[in-house]
Image (cartoon, rainbow, N blue to C red; front, side, top):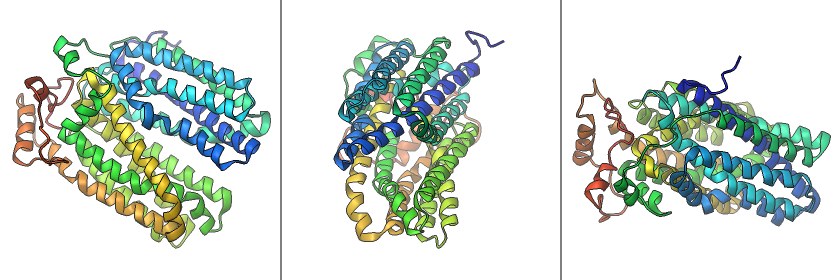
Length: 446
């Protein structure tokens, strides 16, 4: 018989990961149904673009607000209320028919779901018992998210064909309810008790962006991934044209997405074996793996080689996501963790939006495989920018002065400022933010 309120940390993480899998699967199905319905009823590219902008694009605009909520209030309550409000929006969509009404309601749901994402990621380091379980927890949650993204659209397509979009919206509302119940069953410390000076130091919506800029390691990661999405975002837009180039049609297009999605699930699963010492290594190795896979797609003479390359790309991408999340969680103080992660996602979302705007002219001028080669160049540039992260890996047995040794590495061989002249620290308390968060003594890595 299932324990209503699990006491072990691993059981708690499994429940949260299960809830995320269920809600993401339902959400992916619902957004597939929404976009298909908008296109079917309007045949308007403008309405389709509006639908994508107000759902997938909302994180880049309003992400910091969701992060602020996750830092300001109890994260467990934030997660519950976030999904409850999303449930109400999708329940309303069951009874809506006009495309513009559906889009507005979906926009409301996307805004409501923003605090859940940052709050749940920020809570993970506080819910595990052992520092080495952070990577395992991130891996499990990321696997659930990617599996939901891979399976959800297929479920949405089948339900739309058999019962109509309203059924999909109703099912998605139920998945939110299940996720809420799972979150209610997980009791624990979702955030740390904060000292007054911590709260005072990290005030305001921009506190996450300020910390992201001030911390050399995360500033470098943000710059690298911004460069990455500028090219690889255009590769995403080229997928449909790539399938057409090989004369594979819609089935080939679906196969491209499925291979990347399957690979990302595998890569996320492998992330469970990462440790604080190996996270920087796999972040860099995975970045080079993505670049190699993108070039392979760009030069592949056969469609099957494209599929294999995309599977490898997905696997490399999955493991880098787990490594990146672990590094950010360890380096960020709990008081500002949600806002920092939201700021990071906002930067990437803006880069992705820029890539989408550039993709049309680039794809028309170069063709799909050359566009992927351009994505490979951006991925390679990102990997080269991340190379100094290897200095964060641990050598030998870490001692009690591990944090001090790590700081000495950066003093001798700094990762480099993005803009010269920006002060690294603003106060004695700010100096502490350059150290790993959440106080793990046996650690020299990020």
